[in-house]
Length: 268
Image 1: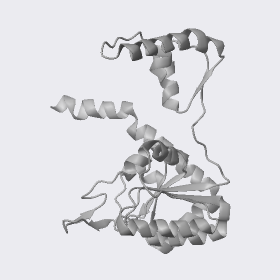
Image 2: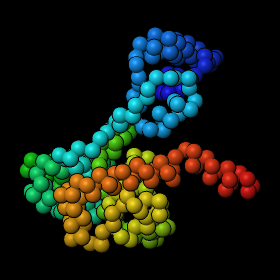
Image 3: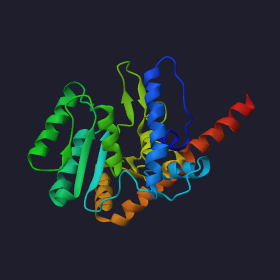
Image 4: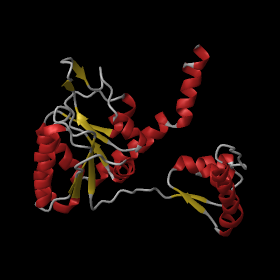
């Protein structure tokens, strides 16, 4: 909304004139009546601050106050994606987290962020319900997760966790390998939401995210890695800082625009 608040010129839209009038009126009111009454503004992300400083005539201080922050009291793990056993080892992961809940009680939260699919999805949700009834901090959904809720949970999380079955067999009977022959949304969600990743060692992690990714070799190793993150707050803080730096350094709009121009447009 930076353009609308500070930079936009009056617009015209003959297809939707009433919405256009409303947008122009609100822009005029914001620029003339709201902004002058404040000594500074805050934004949720540093690139917004940089854009304001470089592209607008706003001369007062601009502060960055993130939408989410790291809370040492609770470590929030999120496991995103459709809930199907063939995709991920939900059973093994829930078994591990149930043990961790008993040891760390309210210090951790696990969010199973996806829609259950078929009988396997129903079984996983039933297990989540059993864990919830024991008083443990687990969040799950019995149906479609609205986009707003999906984004909110990812933003609130500290770590994206996915116990992928790297080799999967689809209905065609053909094996596919996540991260090698089949794409996964996982790295892109880590980039978009600037979160560290925890994935099995067979999942091919792109080089740009290695400093913000933890890999594990077995369920026993996974449990050890999770305990390490829960007990060593400095380690988690460093992973979060690395995730933010990686997203900004390698995947900002400026970096991608430069790549598109130099590596594609100029070579066509």
